[in-house]
Amino acid sequence: AQSVTQPDIHITVSEGASLELRCNYSYGATPYLFWYVQSPGQGLQLLLKYFSGDTLVQGIKGFEAEFKRSQSSFNLRKPSVHWSDAAEYFCAVGAQGFQKLVFGTGTRLLVSP
Amino acid sequence: NAGVTQTPKFQVLKTGQSMTLQCAQDMNHEYMSWYRQDPGMGLRLIHYSVGAGITDQGEVPNGYNVSRSTTEDFPLRLLSAAPSQTSVYFCASSSGQGLGYTFGSGTRLTVV
Image (cartoon, rainbow over all chains, first blue to last red; front, side):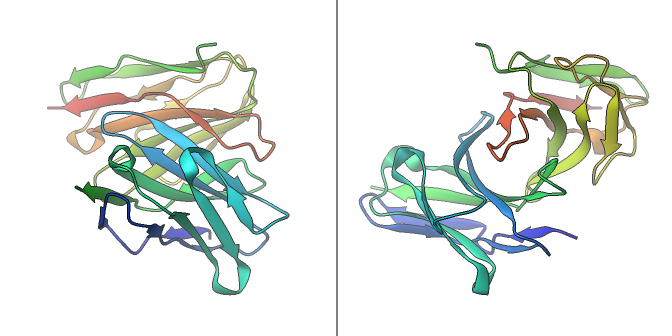
């Protein structure tokens, strides 16, 4: 069965510092991988996705993620965090021909001044 | 373009009551899903649909029912509400071409 692990429940980063959120997946075939962001009281917004090609993908709001098949990872990065990036971030894997998504438990990002 | 619209935004039910959460999308997406979000558990799939007339169970389907009579609508029915169904419910849709799901803004349900 497909699964996603986000090992960090909370992360605190200083404004202007770099960010890396970890995501490990388990899936038997080539995965579709996604990162979503959720601001408090809001729905989920797609940041970026990977399903083939270049393993470094660029998304919105200055985020990027790198797919590493050998490590079953899809970590999210941003070179300089802004206070508005404080939110909860979810990694997801597309299963069964992309008919459904399996989500990780999320990482809450706190940004300190 | 409204995207994915969920109604109501908030609802309080008594144990044993039934209700329907509405979800509509105007993007002509074939794929639609219902998720519930609980603290520390991420989003868990309840039911999903790959087109009108076709539905299937997800990870946590018990106590919920769905139907898909049109491409646009995918209502979720709670048959007999229980406190364990207190959660935030999200509906999502996708064209199914690796573009990702578009989510609604959610329904916060409390069962007392």
